[in-house]
Length: 182
Image (tube, rainbow, N blue to C red; front, side, top):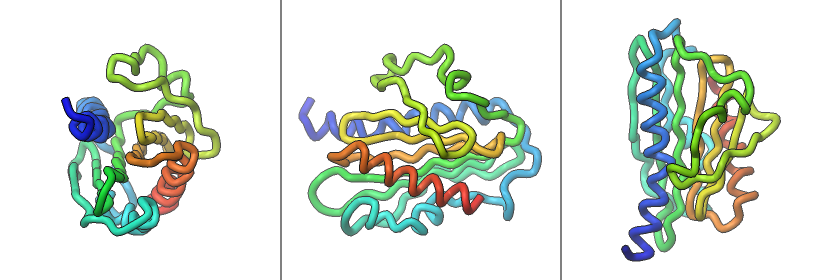
């Protein structure tokens, strides 16, 4: 497998994990009202924080990956990729599931999960975001997961970033914006 193929596969990891979690949450719920104003639009939320600034240059148009709004859950996922050389991208996956309660602690979320089986490091707790927030680093990127207001959760992933600390700060910026809006 070429290095470019390996890198492309690694960039898909956050999307695949998000889709797996989406399936789990969807199986759990029958909603209780949902977010203010109805639908969540991850592309609009990402657009508000200027993906070109997050990625350091021009970006392609945002791509909706998941857009589901029904009685069980409201789920939206969007991604932006930088133009030009390199494989920089940012994605946002936001969910509201009224009949699914978020974990109350990081330990509750982490219990029984084997992150190594999917090639990821065990997440570390991030303080000061939502009710529970965790981040995990991946080769060339970071995944930030935030749970708030009992039924909301999001994942922010940034890939192609050389500095994990800077990537985490950018992911936190996106997360703060999303929580302010919803």
